Structure formats: structure tokens, C-alpha cells
Image (cartoon, rainbow, N blue to C red):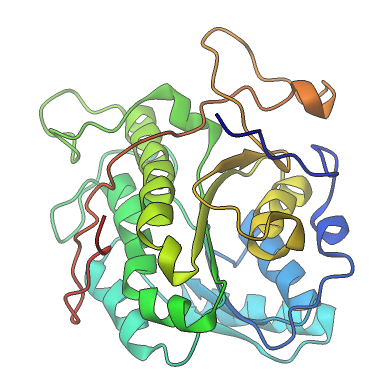
Length: 292
């Protein structure tokens, strides 16, 4: 059993504290869902360190507005918006086809919570499609990530993953009465399983893939930014982090507490072995996750 990974940061640390002293000049990043909240804070922090940031969002006007706000706040003119509908694999494929050159950082942040039952035009349950299948965006961008050298992928999950597993036999939830919170939990568990399996398959390509429980806005971005950019976790892959530490296994019946010292925090389930769900989603290039 390997030793748990810890850092000097904790639940009270901010994204700006994590990025302090780190230069991302010359690095390119995509942040999905970067128009507001945690995604916006993540994009802003990466841009403040000099990264060229693309904010990918469903609403292109909102993405462009966020990019302008971040450019004004950071003095970094290389922040731009892009359109992506994560509930549409065709839209995801368009972003992949339009991307050229290396990609050093991919933060898959965008997500949908417990809204009423809906299906995508491709027939998938909406949360599973947008929160998981759409973020197989990383599969389509594999070559761009591999060409960057020491690229990082951050899958933004949630403590909500502890509320339900992936129903492999019925991922679109058609066989039982629909529960939006179980649908959300499934999608967030899938994010973690993706990180674990992609980390294995892409290790030889130098791509690190980790998952996070984000938490609150400033601190939540701290954990995402830690995994996206900090030299403290260079080479770390296939892990689940929260409060800027590797999480320890979830203990049923133990309530979360952010008032404990860091060594006692993070009582959540860290994803262990798991198969990648729907990893063989193909784009126009017919790319899959890769060999096991």
C-alpha cells in the first residue's frame, strides 16, 4: 500500500495560495464550465499564472464574457471562449476537431446537478451524458495532451459520488423510477472511475489524470488548481483529492467535517480499481481510450 499523498495546503487554502510562485507561461489549458463559480475561479487562477486558457461552455456569449472578465482581472490577453455542449457527443467532437497544437491542462469542471429527468438527442440520461460522456472529451484530445509532455487532466467529481455507484447494466436509468440525485451520484462516480482507468492507460504518454471533490468556490478551485498546475503533485496520477490532500476511503456513517485538522479530513471514498465507463466513445477519428 502506497503512502497517502499530502500537501502543505488544506481546506482553508485558496487557489491563489496554491498557484503562488508557479509560472504557466507557454502552457495551454481548457476549462469546461468556466463561466461562473468554481470553473470561473479555476480559469482565472490558471490565467493569472500565465496560461493560455480556453473557457469551453454551452453558451458561447457567456464564455466570451468570462474570458474578457478574466483577461481584465489578470492582464492575460490569451483567454478565449469556445462553445461546447457536453450533452452532445457531436458538439464535443467539433471542439476536438477544431483544437490544434498541444494541450497541457484539461479541467473537466462543467456539470449538471439534480434537475428533472431528461434525455439527450442521442438517447442518454442527461446527467450521465453531460457529466461523464461529454467529459470523455479527454479521449478525443489525447494526442494533444500527449504531445504537450507532462500534461494533466482534472476530473471534477463531488462528494455526492458516495450516494450511488454506476449502474453498468442500466447507465441511462430506464428500468427503475427516476431519482435525479442517484443519477447525479452515478455520473460523479463515473468521473472518478474515468480518472483511475485513464491514468493507467495513459501513464506511458506522460498524462496525469486525477479526480477531485471541489468543495467551496475559492478553496474548491484550490484543489483543482493544485492538480492542474502545482509542482507538488508532479507525476501524481490516478488519485482522488479533496481539501488539497489525497482523500482517504469513505467511511459510511461518518459525517463530513471541514473543521478538523488536515490529517483527519477527507473522509470520502477514493476510487480504487474500476473499469472506464463508455471509454470507447468514438469521435470522427474513432479514437478510444487506448490499451490497458
